[in-house]
Length: 380
Image (cartoon, rainbow, N blue to C red; front, side, top):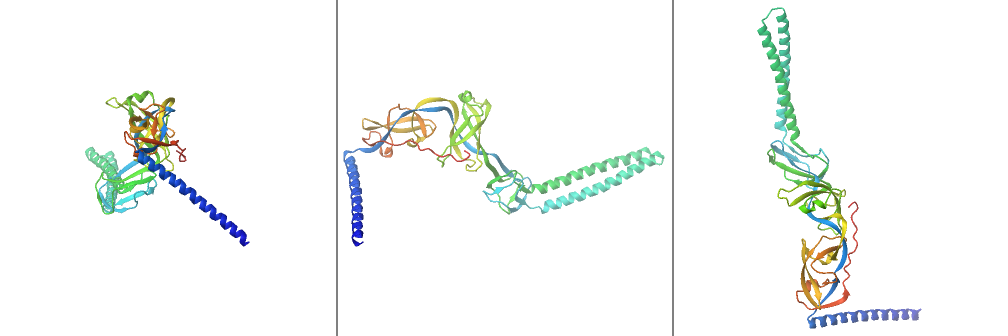
């Protein structure tokens, strides 16, 4: 047993020693390579070759995601806020009370209106009786026709007073109801602009409520897009902070151009049942067409562009050359480029260290910049 244990210990020690020696030699080789590159004044980089790829004919757009159901709630009657029942981000149901204004004055006004209505109704009842009695006396020639007409006029005036009192009582009830600001639909409180104790004026904004389960994008396209877009086309777009692309449907195309004749307004609907996306975020995407075109392309991860323009470094005879390119929207992890031909070697790893005219040392063959498949969120 002791011999076996000793033997096993010796084997383990040899394995550990061999592994350490291997890693040390690898590290020394890397350090030697870096030292050689530094001494030669070269920048170590990898490159990717520009390839021709098939892209769907599409129309790029930019816009903001907006909730299809959104409302800015305003005070309809003046008054002091006595209670606020929600916070920003709270989920509310249609008809839920968000805040309440002081109802004491409104309640007294409603009671006064009800009393005036009761008084008017009593007076109208008496006027009706007087008119009926006058009509009977007129038939017996006990009063003049003029006296009967006076009674009839008083009856009509009393009936009109009842209608006016009913309107005043109804308006008082409506004002009481308007003192309670309620959610118009199921959604979430996006903004709360009121605190308990605030005195509101009629028309003052107090809440913003949105329903993010269904979003829309309003976008303006160039006028020449009118022949390329139509309702029903699919849409793909990206949102800052998310790796995956999202989808939508083009639902409306304006029947007229903008007053200056340059833009065509379209509306895109975006399902968002899981509420992953938020209203107000900026997006950039494509309205997908049915055709295909072949264009030079690079992996999207290699391109640092602002809008549709960007700069790349190409490797020509071991020298970095700066090239400006026009970049199209991403499709399936690649972006079409205009400005360098197919077959051009583009600096990938190490591009942050390269300047125009830098001497290059291309290492490890071509960079593996093939985009990895991304999983779209369920329902997108």
